[in-house]
Length: 347
Image 1 (tube, rainbow, N blue to C red):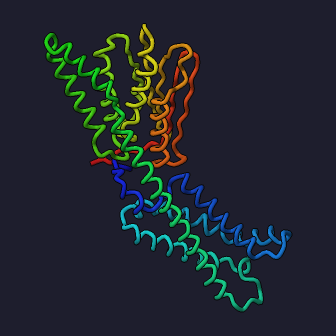
Image 2: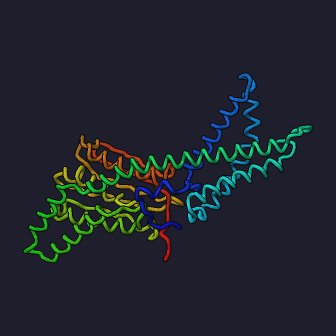
Image 3: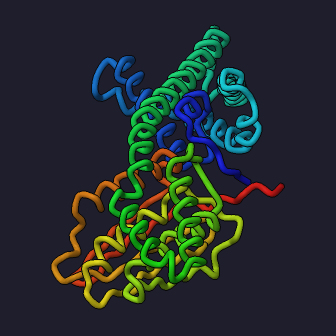
């Protein structure tokens, strides 16, 4: 199970890759086979020799690679609890041990009869296994550093600018309009504003409970209703969502903000925003759909910035295991996001 995690700038570079992540697994397979192809080209004397050399290398590489991935998948919870450099040593030691075991039990498949320098081959293959493991770990650390610097800066700016100034001014004016006639409602609205801005300005976490994000989004909608009244309606379809689900913070609220400013607000009669969340196996699916004025389905700059920010955060946190899709028509705009279902850690 997972708990909410910090996304401070120095958190990601000192962590091993998540070996249970599909994107990490695919990158390991692609890079390893790419290195095998490079070795093949260096060893072959002609193009006709390349397929045979590649088959010889992959015959040993494939069982080593699959065994290491399986063991690392099982050891992931333990690797998460140890220091980064100790984890690096453990991963490299695992690669060396698996290489030796598979080479030894491979028998004549890897040691042709009559060859006297079998120990030399064993040492050579072990060093190659450790070298490939080291290259992969260096790549993932480099990727983590690059992503964390670029996306952290972009995310921090986006989160601080997420609640636009005109929303603040409109909310204040709406509160001033009811402060004498409806003091209790005005007090509730100010509390909602305080919670909303505190969340936007706080040091964000990787993942927060879904109920917290829904509560924040409902506070946002309540503030917008102060100025839009019955023109703004929201159909919440969240009954089937597990109470322990985790999602990235400020994921739902920006989508609702886009739906309000680029959809409902432009319709004289207003409209209803549909928010649907559900769990499907190991995935959590989120859909936000709003009506829009004819000819106004295409997103403008503000809409693109919100979706770009969401895309970058999903890529950083979940790699290829998260995906999003945008659909627009003559009178509707829909955003669908699918991400892994992660549980809040029980106390």
